[in-house]
Length: 437
Image (cartoon, rainbow, N blue to C red):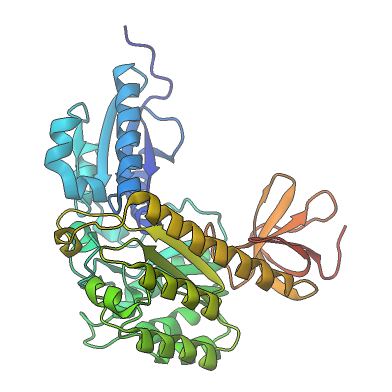
């Protein structure tokens, strides 16, 4: 027997995966709100839209489990309709329709108008760039391009997102102005590949030009760069970073590995020598820059010698921020034609070893920050602490500065000068430089 639906005609959007998916969910929600639909993000609603991730095995499993959970809610009468969109649906739609038929409809990554129609809404062209942000009011993601033209052997993103498509500078500047008018102080630039920005529409790499334009937007104080591909990196970006106070001295550049045989098989278009030269240039041209990178261990053919070289390199480079993932053998990628030679337990051991090295580096780096004063953005209050970030830290993935809320008061969404009084592996503790109790 059907139970009574708790919240009628409310659309609940559930987002899985990366910040680029979150951006897409925000665009969907903005369109729905403009159609006078009641829409929420990961709250109670009788109509559910799941924006899935299909990047690696763990993400796919999480997405499938989320779909199954909402289908069970539907079968129990607590949800009326379930729609699935995003990368997993783009990549595996025929399989999903067969295996989980009780979903009302599946949509791909470029099916927004069709999805809106299924939700009883019309796609409004005049709202391009407008969205309903789900992040704290002081920061927002700005997706500057869609898709990817890189040939990386392990990556399925081009299968799910298509070829690289840059958004024009004028359109992005207008988006930035709109966000600033709503109180956003920090823009986090995202794409599958920031480095490639502009090549398709301007016939040149135009990331530096875009940054200069975004710096003119009143109300925006920080601009942060995520997902910059190392090969072909536009070096004029470093000059902008050095000369423009609004551009954070921070860059997220996924390097994946350092052993030349692995880089070659990965089709990364670079070498150990070129990678080290690029990192040296970053640090020489932007003193104090915080470099975030991600690595993959257990790639097909990775030998113990390759891994030892990677460990030594991580120890030498002392990255300010680092994440490590185990290789996922993905269908339809070039690497899928290779034998997945490294056992799963060895992959995990290697990832743990890398992160143990990084944890020590991070602890040592953080100890050196004690006594220093940093301009921090205050994002939220949580568990009795005001939670802030320095310009060297991105939301959700990097260090945070914790300030005892029982002793001090800070304004959310504003900057504060904080003196660091203590540090752990991945957190800093601080107090206002001019204490306000």
